Amino acid sequence: MKHIQSHHISKIAQAAILCMAVCAFTGLRGGALASAAASKGNNATRIAQEDFGKMPDGTVVKGFTLRNGNGMVAKVITYGAIFTELHVPDRHGNLTNVVLGSDSFEPYLKGFPAAAAVIGRFANRIGKARFTLDGVEYKLAANSGPNHIHGGAKNFAKVVWQAKMLPAREHEAAVQLTYFSKDGEEGYPGNLTVTVTYTLTDDNELRIDYAATTDKATPVNLTNHGYFNLAGFGDVLGQELWLAAAHYTPSDDQLIPTGEIASVQGTPLDFTKPTLIGARIEQLQPKMKGYDHNYVLNNDGRSPKLFARARDPKSGRVMEVSTTQPGVQLYTANHLREVVGVGGAMFGKHGGFCLETQHYPDSPNKPSFPSCIVRPGQDFKSATVFKFSNN
Image 1 (cartoon, rainbow, N blue to C red):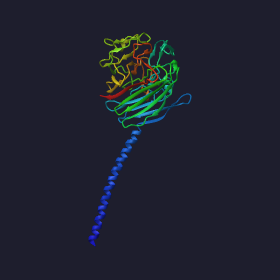
Image 2: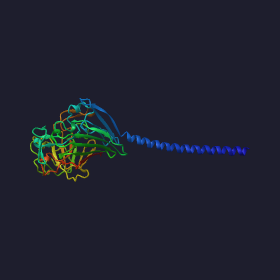
Image 3: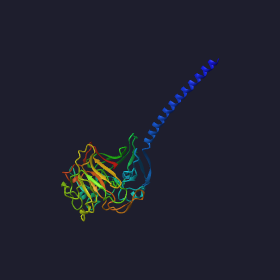
Image 4: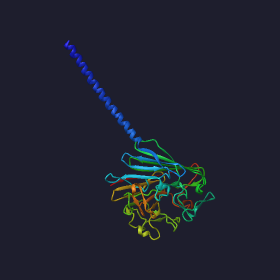
């Protein structure tokens, strides 16, 4: 009887041990599954949507917040397809917003002078606000003296885009914005559908992909007019810039290209070696108040190619820029008046620098420049990537 009891107790003990082991395994497996689910949930929270403001007609302007696995944050709104904030770590891991913008909608509605908006249908200038295409002359809005600039008075930067969050992926988050530009808008021919996709990756890249289709031949030149300041405040004259650009397009007094391609060697425009932005800026005066020049890039248009590296010596932040486009406009906020940015940061003249990837200015009137004409069945595509690091 004792033997039977002992044997019975031993069986019970074994069963208890087995049960504990199974429970432990199940708990571990459940924990792993919970961890995986949490990871998937965290991935889903890489992008969030909220209301950012309202247009005078009541149209709601949406805001999207994108996050990566390193703490970097990018914010985009449907008005002008603007990215309003871009928080990037310095060499100590401290996050700072490095793009001029506002954390409320009202300043944008009043014409915030340094918005990181998408510019179109044609970024930069078109001389005499007109061009001829397939034997037909088109007259555009003259909104820069006698010339046309940045798509006209009501351009892509001043309209509300349609937006959708793209499905979350393991190492990135993206939002896609779409705008339909009607035939005749601002004088341009053709119904143009434009799509811009912002993607924030775990490689600390903000990628902007542009696409457009048309039902009639039309010029297309899309860019983003983001003003960067890698310190997050003050001016950018003490920040360093390198450009893989040995040539530029000289322009007249109204900043319309003459059609020439000239060397930057021996001029204040030479950034083929890393140079402080403010090192030679005074040499451009009095004719110009700073840099506002189109540089020629050696791109094949197929995949983004590195052409710029900017660095803030104090914070250690580095921004590398790649593009598929044939040119880039360097602009140093020469006429920026005092503005209050995100979190109350103050900016004034030379408070940021723009690297507007583009086709050359006045391309529709310069047959020798790379063509910017898009025709039915020939989709427009381009990409620009801003990659951040620190040292």
